[in-house]
Amino acid sequence: MTIYKQALGEDFKRLHIKLQERYELPTGTKFRASGVMREISGGPKWLSPFFALAVKKKFLFPESGQYIPFTIVNHSFIDEEENLKVHWERTFFFGKKKRYFNALMGLNKENLIEDYLGEPALFYSDLICSVEKNRGMKIVSGKQRFMIGKWSLPLPRILQGVVEVFEGYNEDREVFTICVTIRNPLIGRLFFYEGEFREDDD
Image (cartoon, rainbow, N blue to C red; front, side, top):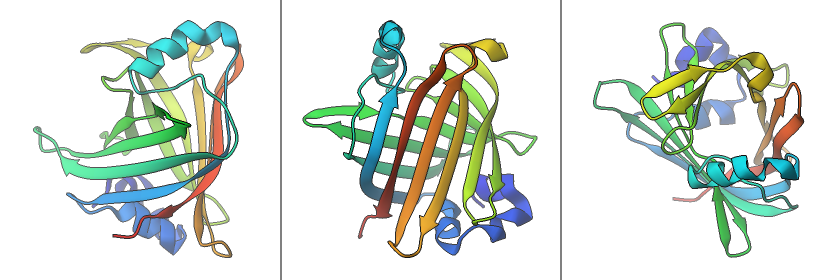
């Protein structure tokens, strides 16, 4: 059973059928898709040192633009400790330049998604999943920690990047839709993208 199905419980059945198929993701399988981000934008320029570090970690990036091609690969697997994990590889193509927004997700004892952002992880966040009235998926962040190797430092709310994700399915266009916003209580918007994608043919 996928970590997302466990996190949502009976509400998983309320998702649009295409989202159920996407997030079912049996162990050992991959979901591959391609699409276009209608808009990608980042935070203020004075955060460039942070974004420089994030780029090296395949986390966030400073580039912005419109109609940016991207791909996504989700891979479900069992790790060495017999825990179910899902690796996320999101690649954005700014001309010949590639940027990444990668993560490794698992499930904790409270049925919350554990999200390790970056490779190796730079940040950790609890993720709370729910189903919207339009049968889409909503994901919001909870507790967060800054990762230093195997060590972690809890982040107070004032220093967190508060995440809000909406993923849906447009039946008329037969595409998945995605909107991701990361905000900080002091700085405002740190990162944003919004677009659509289709599953790749085998």
